[in-house]
Image (cartoon, rainbow, N blue to C red):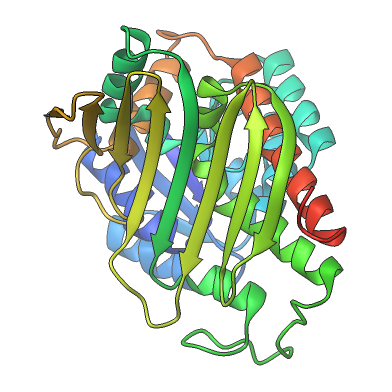
Length: 347
């Protein structure tokens, strides 16, 4: 099999630090042939480094005869439109960074379009493809007991995208506008929704696997300067989401904790934008005994691209229904939490 020619749509940190180097490491499966941006000039810089062509127009990338599959590493509100354009162009596969879409209607439109055209679609949930998460879920299904609670705790260094959303202070100023009034419930609700669909969405497929039906959001509030605290009940499981992102930065923590009636499982994912191998999985049972699962050199970014190759060549089936359900789950939570903030923050 010849490597598939890839067009990367978007030239931000996710493309430059993660996906493009991953493609370079998987040269038996993929060849980077085209990069686009919206006019920043980063696509041309990256293309020069990797021997690819560049443009500022997705249509030019889709018209490139060497392009067989596309990777959408663009802002979330552009994903649905770009997927439709890629389907219309007849690409052989679409890799879309999370979220798939930010509105329920767009989820159905793009999934139906890909399914109807027979185009494989994969959403870049690298945590779900992490081998350590596979070991954690095996442990949970092999007799750990019923899941009682899930906690997703994020303590992250600054990220310009989110600083620009909520502040004109700190290391990533926004000169075009003043600081939004987070005391305004409408503004706070909009910011919370963007944080949930941009950050919490990384692990919503894993949460949905453990607690598939959202029943009630109990509380939702922003935690200035950039953060949130959200609690909800899903399928009888208590779920808590916490984020803090401080302008001065700190050691990154990205932890998913699952408590059962038999033990506690901690999955510590590596920081974003680095290749640091798999997550670390530890289990503490009801007697206090600690078990640590092995660490893999391969991370979820490589694994998800390998999975994408198997979809494109037809080795694995495309899970369109799971893709649809994961996207709707994340949007349902984001909508419910932001509605709660508009009405006061607690049920």
